[in-house]
Image (tube, rainbow, N blue to C red; front, side, top):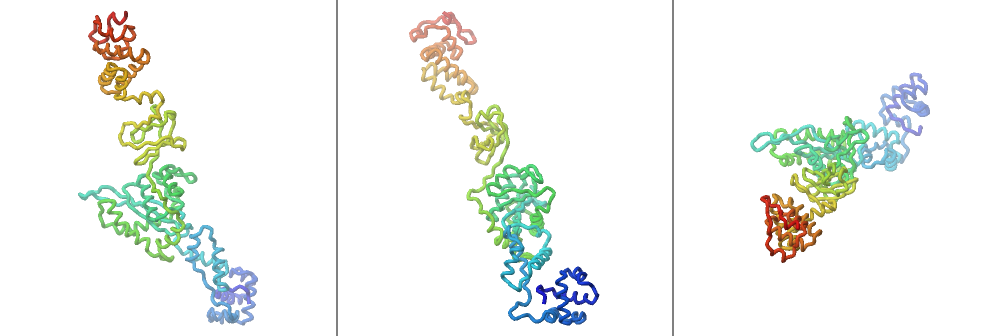
Length: 515
């Protein structure tokens, strides 16, 4: 008896063809068997004396008994076919599992009743071909999350019945089990795009290794088959969840066939059932989507055991990463040029950076609460975010020394400085500040008065200020003119009568200033 069993259908073909006077090699090519196997089976048939006409009337079990004899005691009977659904699940569960390894485990379990390796592999491949085409792509457990927007939109109506806007449908699907998530958003803009990712991961309760979106402008700045350029906020979100983004190749829908199928299912299973309802808010629409989504994920597969939810819990979720303890905070990035006044523009508010960066390009990262500025990937400053347009937020340490000294002065400080020298100097400082439409316009004059005190001494400055007040000309120019005249400004000299002429414009002139 030959060592390898032949199927009874092929054995009947061999018995029928042996009467056609074909050579052993011809029979080998016709039946897809080796020459040695054909020779052994022919000898077994001739020894058993089974004719072609008789073979047609015998059952497979009887034909096997006639040709090969009764089975030896203790030898198993029919071969045990492999569980193809189990094979399919194991190939998806582990990246490095092969058909060879699965056959070895199967053979160890069933012993002599197991199929040979080639028959095992052929049996599974024939089974896999009967699956839907979208299932043929091999996905590993917990590895990929496919992301897309459905082409269809849902109208949202105002309270008076008019259409307010069209809601967009965000859809994701896990690669291995196909567990779906869907929600309606107002737009497909960056804030909605990223917020939908966060809510999808919260729905799954874990994070995948790879995000596989289409190539939307909101997430992929430059689509390229080999080196796509990601939007920086999207790349930051992926890094927060310790994942990477690998967009589908442009114009290659098969790269994301999983989500394409899921989008179709969501449109048929969810949107089609809601087509007769009118919604007046996104919250109302999403509340209607959630139970239908649960029903879709728990619906049993037609050809595989379980459902999307059960496969997700068994395959995907154990292989996924836990969500970070710190929640993701939405942030936008903007490349900006540092202006000559060492400030950068973020939404029409101006934030200071170190003055050495003037003329350089930096990145501004801004959330709802903070603004960070980075230069060559290093953070150089941060500010509390302000929403006042046209105003400035400036830190003193960012200023040049000359600007910093000027900025440290205030009306109150300048008046206190003047009064520390004397009442007359303080009075002139206060007059200089009040005589301008804005106090800052008088800062330079006050600082000029300060310089006179360093040049001539504070006692002479106080005496000159007192004289300027008596003359009715409390200005820096008048005080300077008095000091430059060299007049004796000792206190007793101020009690002497003065013979001075004051022009109509108020400037101090007279012989006493120049003698």
